[in-house]
Image 1 (cartoon, rainbow, N blue to C red):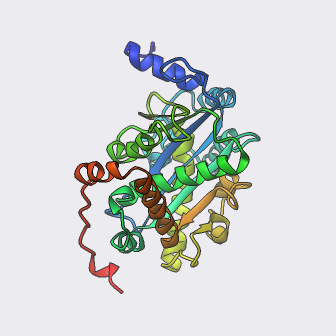
Image 2 (cartoon, rainbow, N blue to C red; image 1 turned 180 degrees about the horizontal axis):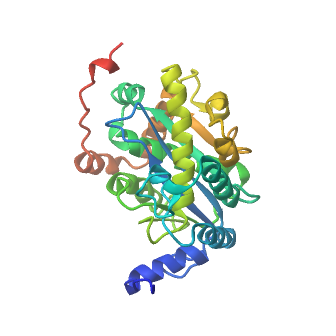
Length: 314
């Protein structure tokens, strides 16, 4: 069957993602793909996870992934069900595990960094009300995305690679209007990141590399949910907790380990209350340098705290 032809603009964007160029045709050093797992309205823990790599390696990952899936849509949530396009509902359990491990090996390879951030929704909501600039952080999904990007940028800074060109891609519909404000800040003329950070929001159906991000986020989410159900407190008192701390809750079939091994001590985290206090300080420093921006931001992003549920109150 001949695939439906993409609109010209969409085709250009998909090509730019594959070949490491932004919409203006400027070569981009790194590509970053993120997806979310869990809903803050329904789940006690949520996760944003994905990976980043050089553009040329992303192209290799994409080719290998499409070869493994036959170009069909992979979605962890529907894997093993009648809704799975791969037909995995009819596979044996061993076949499903082997297939997920094959996908894991495609993305967890040398040169590719697996990354994720998870947070406890109730604890985050309590913390949010105590911040000076809650409109810059919340709600929970946006805060999770903000944290995973912030951790990545800190890593770039520590490695001395902050000035390389990076393009972030999120799934279409993942709270675009809230996430985009982070990138708007970087576009300030006096920001060290001005001109070297790009972003986009694309659908999984046409952006293959969001599918490995879905696998990563989904498997990490299953891990932290299992930990939370056993002991509903992920906060160790530090700003963040290594995912490896909860390795006893990795899936027994080895799939979680296949995905996060080598990354669960330095790039996969649970973000705790102190982390968001730190990020609040980042906002404070920004507004001290740009006081004229505060009134604009408060008008554009008014903070309306959601009422705490009975289960949120100690």
